[in-house]
Image 1: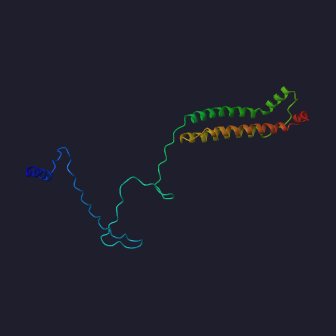
Image 2: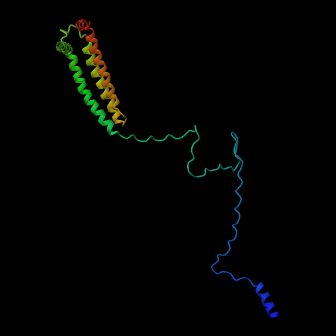
Length: 196
């Protein structure tokens, strides 16, 4: 009896057998050393105390600037040449050249052209004076074409949109041409008599 009771007591007091595959317990990590004391930051206008070292900025991702803060100028992205603008500008300049030539020829023979138009319409003889209308048409067409060419080339070289310049010059030249033509026709007594 004593033997069985002693056996039970011995079994209870024996250390349990450890699992050979179990991981050993990890000891707790030692506490981190305390941060070194930071000397007081000098206020505006004060001298720093002896031995003061300014805190160094921490390396990390750049922080966004608040609204209104100064930033370094960034390089603008390079402009890309627009092929459609180049083609359209060249086409408009070629058409403008032929339009200038036609406008100059019409201005040189304005009286004869109006006489032929009157004859075809049965209005009689053109008796008006072309006056300065021919000179206005010639000068305006030549100057506008030179402006279109002289302005389009720098715009194309700087890769900016340029088609609008010869287009605007052509519209202005057409307005001047038809305006001068109507002024000449409205000052013709033959046309005025036929209309009344």
